[in-house]
Image 1 (cartoon, rainbow, N blue to C red):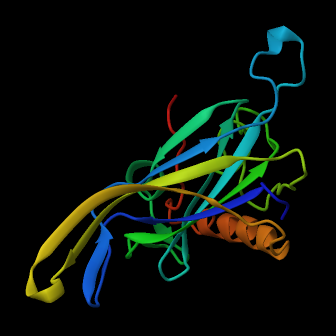
Image 2: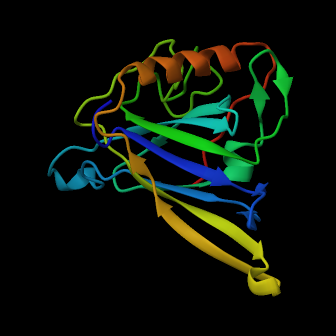
Length: 212
């Protein structure tokens, strides 16, 4: 992986944990991605218009991939994804088992150039706008591929310090982590696992792109 090409973050929509305090998600999380590359106005004739693919892979807290999809972003475009509606609403585990506990987990996003026709004809069901996240046909990353992003969490903390019960709710926005210098084998794993997930006959496991 190259700097800027792979971003990682976590989501938590309803999970709690035990300890001196209980804390966790209490609602939808919002993933925001921006394509910072290229010229958003091709009529100016300055620079190139650079479409990027956000190849998205969503995992539960058992490190199992449950959904994947490829979503196009044009230059300077903001893509806003609801975790509940766009990224976890079609959950399916390998082996055809749908559902499962996916209240929290990890999200990996890889920036790549389009690798299919814009209509995705003949590609996997996870392909949108010319972006196929599977190993067929597969894709590569270069220094020209880059995305920026953050995720907003709804959170609740409950505790009783000094015997006084308190409940604190809040919203935090966290920048996605850049996997600079990460393991190149991870790219092969993400593509292959995605292809196996949506090719297992469960008709699930495909996330969807926001409608602009």
